[in-house]
Amino acid sequence: MKLALASVFLGLVVLAGCDKPSERDCRRAIGNIRKLMGTSQMTLADGQDAAWLRSCKGAAKKKSVMCAINATTTDQLKACGLLKGEQLEELEAIDRAVRERAPAPAPTPMPAPTPEPPAPTPTPAPAAPTPAAVPTPDPAAPTPAAAPTPTPAAAPTPTPAPATPPPAPAAPTPAPSPAPATP
Image 1 (cartoon, rainbow, N blue to C red):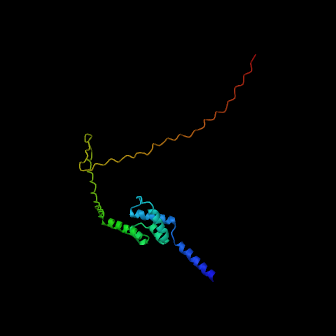
Image 2 (cartoon, helix red, strand yellow; image 1 turned 120 degrees about the horizontal axis):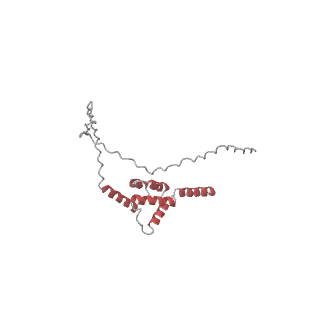
Image 3 (cartoon, rainbow, N blue to C red; image 1 turned 60 degrees about the horizontal axis):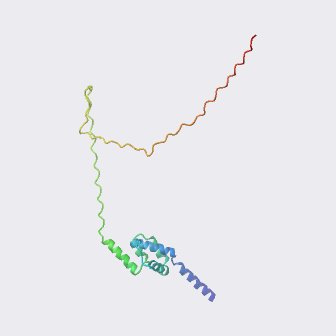
């Protein structure tokens, strides 16, 4: 009976220890808390991080540490329940200071685009133009904008033509045999 009671007690102790966060998780939570509080770039007094780490490992629950790691706003961080006392008061003071700042002005909406007037119709040309008549541009017609010419990123490199084998020599013609000498 005593053995069963001792094993149950030992099991409860082991289970109670499973709800504690790891040192790595506590460091990540502290880093996220400092980032959300705006103190991540500040140098802390000697031992400050170590004190936060001891407090986290000793008193915090794994669920609240994971909540603090995943928090993206100070309101979410407060809801985790990880911060207490001076840390929570400091976070609330930061929240009040942020809320007291004047909100950024709302962006003004862009005006609705106005429809473009229809293009003017060209005037008909005379039936038989004379050689001396030079067309003059219509002053009411809009001047066309010059289109930008695309600039190639790099000049194309010419590829050499594939080498062709030299033509095969023609079949050798038989050399004329010397004619017999006539006496």
